[in-house]
Amino acid sequence: MRPYASLKSLLERFFPLHRTLASDGMDETLRILGEAMPPGSHFTIETYAPGTPVWTWRVPERYVVHEAYLETEEGRRILDFKENPLHIVSYSLPVDRVLTWEELQPHLYYSEKRPNAVPWVFKFYERDWGFCLSKALFDQLPRHQRYRAVIRSEFITDPAQGMAVATAIVHPQGGPAPQAGEFLILAHTCHPRQANDDASGVVTAVELAHRLSENPLPPGSMSVRFWFGAETIGSIAYLAHHEDLIPKLKGGLFLEMTGNRNRLAWHHTRQHTHLLDEVARHVFSTLGDHEERPFAAAPANDERVVNGPGVNVPCLSLNRWPYDEYHTDDDNPDIIHEEMLQQAADVAEKIVRIYASDYLPQRKFRGPVFLSGHGLWVDWRENWALNRALEKIMFQFEGKHSVFQIAQAVGLDYWMVREYVEKFRAKGLIEALPIPSEAPLD
Ligand SMILES: [Zn+2]
Image (cartoon, rainbow, N blue to C red; front, side, top):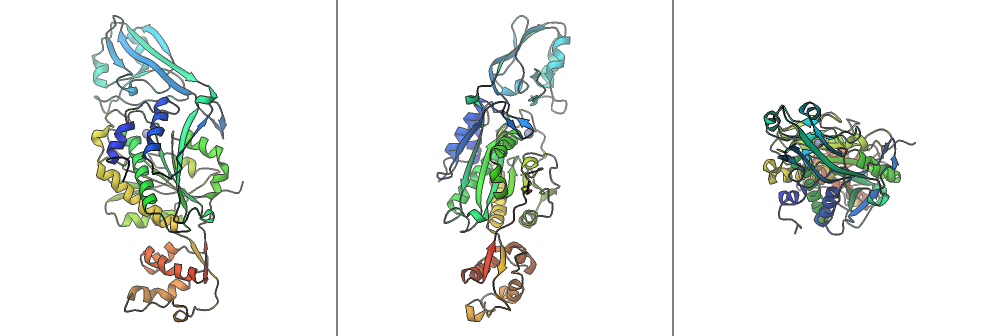
C-alpha cells in the first residue's frame, strides 16, 4: 500500500506551492514528502543557516513574499503573486513605486515562444526585481499610463530559518552493508508551481523508494540514499556538510521531467564509460525508443555537483526533455501522465537493482574449480546456455570485472549469472569486492 492514490495525485499536493531555494513552500513540500516516503526510510530534514559558506558558494537567505502585485495607478490589479507565484521574478527585491511605462517595462518578463504562458524567471544572485506575465497581457497594457509595482518581500538571515534539504535511506535485505557503499538518487524541489520540472522527478523517486523497500536489494548490496532539495546550491550544501559520505557514494542518478509524453533520455556519467554507463545502456537497450546524451547535456542539473570536481561520483541523469511548456506556468498537471511517471520509475529501478547489487568477484582458488565436486556443475539439460558459459564465467573471477560485465561478456542475464556466482561466494571460493569509489584522494 502506498500513502498516495497515484504519483500524479501526490504531485498535485505540492505542485502549486511557492517552492524556491529556501522558502515556506519548500519546507511544506519536504513535509509532504516525509509523509509520502516509505516508513522506515529514515526521512530526515536538515537546515543550513543563511550565509554559511559551502565550498565556493554560500547558503542563500530564506525568501518570504508577504504580498506582490502590479496594478494601474488607479488601482486596477493586473497580476497578483497570490494567484501564481511565477508572477514575480524569484528572489525579487522589495519595491513599492509608481512608475511610467518606460520605467516599468525593463522589469517585465514574458515568453516570445509561448505568448499565452507566464514564464519562470529567477535572479537568485543578481538581485533585482521583476514581474512575469504572458506576452498577450504585456501587449494589452496601455503605454501612456502609470503603474504601481508592489513586492513586499523579505530576505531572512535568521540561522534557525535556514535552507532545508531532505534525505532518506533504504537498506538492502539484512541491513546496511557498509563495504558496498551507497547509491544516491536526487530530485530537486525548487521550481515554484511547475509540474514536470521539477515535481515529476520527485514523485518518481518516491515511487522508487517504495519499490526498494517492499522488495529490498539482495543482502550485501549498496544502500540507496534519496535526496530532495534546491538545485545546485542544495546538493552543494548537503555534500559540503557530509564530505565523509563522498567516498561511500558509488553512483548516482538524477531524476526530472519524467511525466510528460516524450521518450525517455539518459545522460552519461562524467566518466562516460563507467560501469554505471554500461548498466544504463543495457537497461535502455530493452526499452525501444529512447535517447542517449553526453554528460551534463541540457538540461544539466545536480549531476554536475555529484559528478563534479572533487566529488566525482559517477552520476546519470534521466528525463523526457525537451517539451514546449518548460519553465512556464503551462508546465502543470495537464501535461503529466501517470504511466510516464511509472515507466521512468521502472527504468530507474532496473538500473539501480543491477548496479547496486553488483560487485567484483575475486578468486580465492587456484586452477579450474572442480565444479561437480563442489556442487557447482550446471546440467546442460537444465540450463544449456549457462552450462556453455561456466568456464568463461569462472575464468573472470580476477577482481577486475563485475558480475554484470561477466554476464554481458557471456551474453547471459545478469540475475542468472549473479545467482550462479553467489554459489561460489557461499562456498568461500570467491570474495565480493565492492564497486570502487571514484572520489578523488584529496
Ligand atoms: Zn528547471
